[in-house]
Length: 541
Image (tube, rainbow, N blue to C red; front, side, top):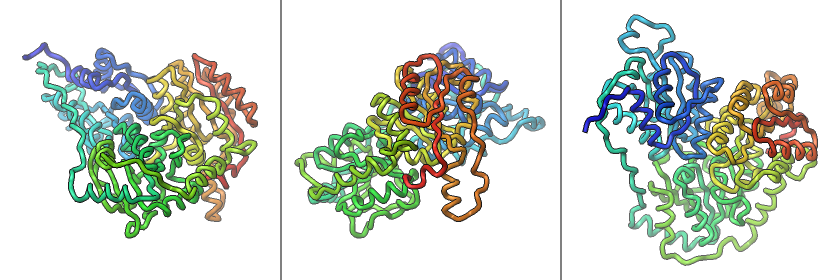
């Protein structure tokens, strides 16, 4: 049946709304006014950011709370160019981000070149798909874009929307929304029988869980499996919380910390069976390349897509739904006891103190203090830098999608907009952004976004007037101290000037007081500048 005519932009907006998208972020330009109007009419609120890169991270923050695709909008030329970093981040960090750019009409670009460049040529290598919206089959195109972004291993999809096409009227013939593919089960046969036999024989099994298991909402099946078979769990940084960190089988997170690797390596080497569930080595430092000897250790891997990085090797691979995989592996097998020599307790005991959590003051003490004061389900975001490595190791996480960061691409300045999106999507939840002073200085304008939205996000800033991680590496390489130092910024005054609350703290007691005030604030952000000495991370990451 043919309905009345709708603009192309209206069709796109309606489909996005049906995919549970409720927020869009970006900076308006003349080329995107029609799609912004359509989004608002469809019930998708468009929110102004101060930079397109931040807009993309706000969209990601919303996604992690709602699980719907993120949506950002960028105008022609510089707007599209500014969106490149966050789009690459979405590709590497496996974020289903829809990036809509406005563009001049193809016929117009033959002679008109003001702000014009080939958006699709730029976005094609950094997305799962880059699609030019044409005059026809619009419903099919946007449906395809959403499916590509969300199915399998998630990632960004780019839509380039010409000005005239956005306004073009179409008779809309309603097509059915694409059916969600059924979960893929591992095939019965010799390989699965071998994996089940290895599970029964294992005395010291260990499981490493990655981001893909989070995307497939496999937390409960993983916890049930591990408790039944006594399998301890290591997670990547973005998979933190898939098993609560106060569970006796949680071994915490691994990724970028040489100190953390030193603590966990004995357990990995002692394992006689390693289970990899949705493990994506794009999050790991090079020290995780071939961490186990695949010629001696049995390794069973469950993936949602084939893995070609060659960072590690496995004995058996199953490309399937993660939950279906471990259900097939464990079906009808009996409960068992493992790790009888106390290795896990020793590792967990070290983990609780080696990152400076017990110090009187410093990054570890700050992390431990904030963790004690906020609810179990609080969402934290972390900017890139030394503090992110520390917090990823030391912060106790209890639910999935509550420790957000740029883990694979390691983009600086992401924590503040990630926190903004997460708080927008779930206003009743405590959201804390952890940032270094260098990272915050990159995105100070987004404090104004927080003010304008009235969001009570807590911003914790580690102030050592240095790009601490790079300064540390520079010293270790015995190079001159170049390009890593800065004057200390008066963040308290900036917070007050931009409509927030501001504190400077140098002790646990001062930090506790500031956090408690922030937790009681409902209408604006609170920025807490934590002064720490230079070199504070030297022995704890």
